[in-house]
Amino acid sequence: MKRFKTVIKREIQELIRHNGLGSIFFTGILFLDALGAIFPKYLNRQVTLFIPLSLIFIIHILNTKKRNKLFLLSVVFNFLGICHFNNPYEAYNSLGLVYHTIAFFIYFLILFKHYQAVSVKRILKFSLLIVIFAVVPTILYSEGMKKMLLFQETILYIFSVALFVFSATLLYISKKTKTNRFLLFSTISIVISSYLQGYHLFVEKNDLLEFFAVIFFNLTHYFMCWYLIEKSRKSKF
Image (cartoon, rainbow, N blue to C red):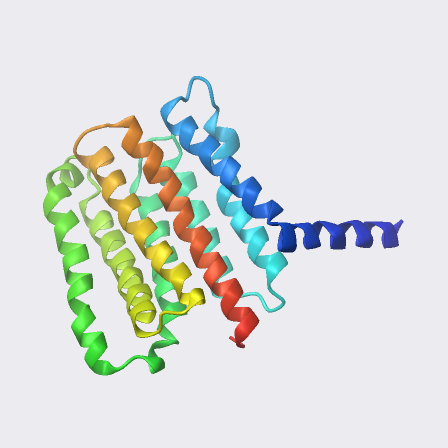
């Protein structure tokens, strides 16, 4: 019986690795969760809300021999952030933003170790990116943040995400490999998600914006996951 379970487990792992079953399932759940954000009467997000990040956790474990513990920790913090801030059945609260802030700062720490391959001059040049990314949403959404009593927490979140965007973009520009392309996709996804979600939360409620914000938020972590998977296959962390 034990041997049978081992064989079944191995076959499932092979399906996910080689046939992309996990990725296909992730995409389906992702769209269901996004649809649930705009059609809560027809799709219960209590079922789909927490599945995308759980699948990302599983995809990473099954596709890497040496797990990146920092990444798995960041997934846990993002999961907690969703529980406290993005849960449609609970009021928005600052603790959720704090968890998301920690998660993206962990992403920054993961990427920081690769800075030795980047020139100081280029780092200084791209430092303008983090300033622009942090200042623009602060100006656009400051009034709404104050009204929701989330100003300080949102500023910390923006700064943390900006650090990640800065790091990921810098590494991609410095070395445009197929692996680093996942970083580019992850960066684009979180920028789109942040601005859409910011407008939805702090300016005007818009179901369509929330739909795409949910999709791109989860894609951010999905692409980051695959960046680390491909990185682990080519080098040792």
